[in-house]
Amino acid sequence: MSDRPPPFTALRAVEAASRHRSFTSAARELHITHSAVSQSIRRLELDLGTRLFERKGGAMEPSSAALRLAQTYSEAQDALSRAMREVIGPQAGSGLAITMPAALGRLWFAAKIGRLNEALPDVEVQISTRDGGEGADVALAWSAQASKNALCELSYLPLCAPELAVKLAKAQPKTLLRSPLIADAADSWGQWTARWAPGAKPPRAHLFDDATMALDAAVQGGGVVMSNVFAAESYLVSGRLAALGFEAPAGQWLTARVQASPETAEAAERFVMWLRLELRRSQALAQGHAPRDER
Image (tube, helix red, strand yellow):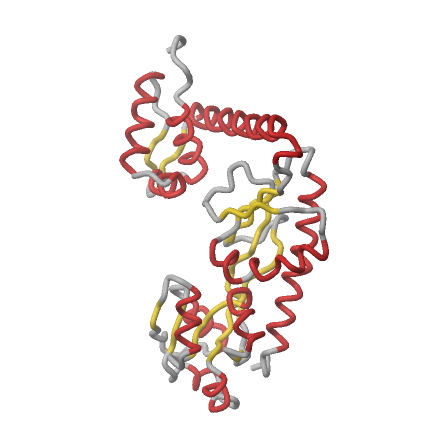
């Protein structure tokens, strides 16, 4: 093996599988098949003469050898990214590389570019919605756990077309559940019901896997949609939808993982500070459109 170049494709699969403890999740991140990940790792195991993963319950647990390879690959990738930025130089491209969830980027962040220009006129951003955040200066992602990297907690709120909102102006939570319901997340209405109508029968809702489609369905009078304050902001500001109050925590936090090079570290720090302020502003704006927030 010493005469051959490092098997970067296999090492990339090992690194992703070690982080996720799952070949399926690694394949999804790398945009390849589960079989491709499995076969790539199996060939590397044969070359090395050692097992890299063991199945334990529903997870694929990496061995110490796999973890070492994953760490080395990650360090090499970071070093190559830094070298590429140095070779390209500031004249060829000085943008701050940001990754974020697609819905957040499309429905919320895109509308903030003007405010970013005003606050940080010297910072240019390169936005990507790919999974993983490899090579990004700042990687934004949703997390089920609060951490030191958390920027804010996501919350759900029911919204509907203004005409329907007039009819539901005095409705209580259990009354809202009798309306046609729409959702852009599988258990959003269930979590909301547990908060505002404990003991009520779990509601059924039309489910969309795209937040824009769910919100547009509500705009057309299709019912009450359960969404989040960031996805719905432009709909609230334009008056296409009205909030009905009764906001509930979603149990998810937006996190920012900063992994900037020395050349972009200051810009990344300033960007994250600006982002915190904008997120708080949006949360306050959504609350301002809600008629009530108490039981």
